Picture 1: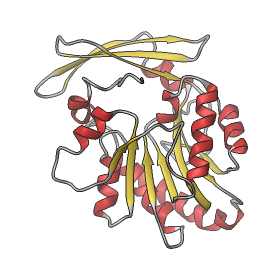
Picture 2: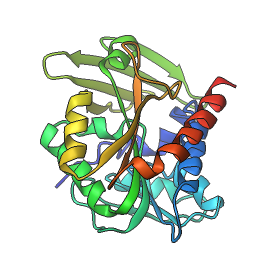
Picture 3: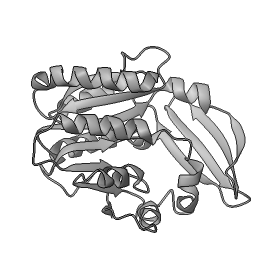
Length: 259
């Protein structure tokens, strides 16, 4: 049985992550959705408490969320906002050719610690897409870990509670461990692995998908040595028919990121 890593953290999660720029993911998803033909159907995989799904639902999208953590899905369903959220595993999705757009964001791919699991998850996402569907996901780089997490410790004031973070990084395995303690409670340990761009590209190829773009998430330009998060847009099929429309989307998002 899989242990729910967010079982005790879920009730605090949205307040801890209040600083996260969901607007960028929301606007990018809307722009990518405009590139796709009807009938349109979207899934946000590893959706957490459903923040992105709820916003897209309000935009009248046919959308659902899936997350491995029952606690996160449960917390997301406590408010009055209608949305569809189900518990499920990226490595064993219950969908086949069901969606025109799949998102999997906030370094969810990094939570897969085994490269074979990462490949399986990407293959499952490919199989859940309709032909010519788009897959929009991201992953963090080692630069992110070294700059912001490795061997660092801090405490945050989250309003009605505090959270203490302790981080360790093993460069040999590429695995980072983050222990998050709310007030004086039990620490929740979250593990992520740094996957190389080469391994991600190989997984996409084996899944029958081809990349439309690898982009620095902060600029939507070509990733470089200092890139901390990479956005990937891939196609289940030939990316050529999308290139012109995507270039316009890229320019639009670049403008939003600079404003």
